Length: 286
Image 1 (cartoon, rainbow, N blue to C red):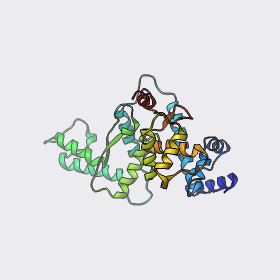
Image 2: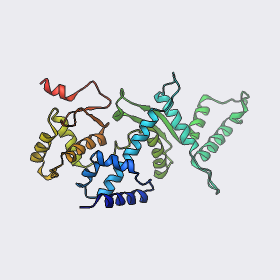
Image 3: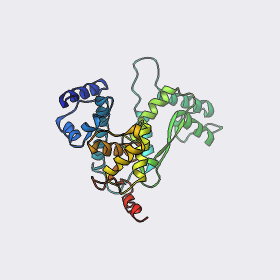
Image 4: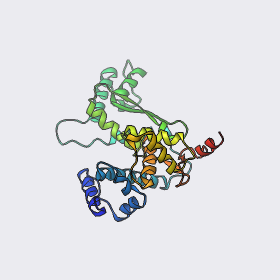
């Protein structure tokens, strides 16, 4: 079994290869106290597993810090405001090129200006002066669309459930797959506050999340015993119960919001965004 010092060196090597800062003593201590180092022993690649967990932990900490940052009273951020902000960030994110090839947004703005000049005989900056024929509303709408090859139409969420968040984009069909992917990565980073959700998960994780949800009120020891009987090919063989518990919590977090554990000794949890609905009380009422 790899020593803790050797494991940390391996994790730091993975982080360095991915361009991420290496671990600090407080960060490593948190992983140890939270049972992640024990979890890693059951993984095929413990160093890569812990590197991913550290990345998720850092994103969670950044999100919590952002939530607690001072905000202007009376100006809550609406989905429309968020979409507008992301749109502005997309258009401002284009680096200045040092060659003869214009960027996406520069090219789009020139194309829109060219279209408008040809249609109306004037520049949009001419203000109230109109050509003899004038500019039809459709001309202005068309120029606007040409100038915005990527447009954030909206961000919607059902209630406060983070897992229901949807982003609607309007894309120029001439964009390449690489251009769309680059833009989407920027939009995704601006929208998501919980980095782990949406990460690739195994079928074992899917089954484990559903299994725990189907058996609320059970202790973690009972859940592990039942799981190992029903899913012998995915059995948790470590004697440390934290390996099973943390795997179940992590599976839920990868699919939806992270759960809040009601009791470290039981298998009940409540969703972060749904504090009023307790699975344990629902099961006990049956």
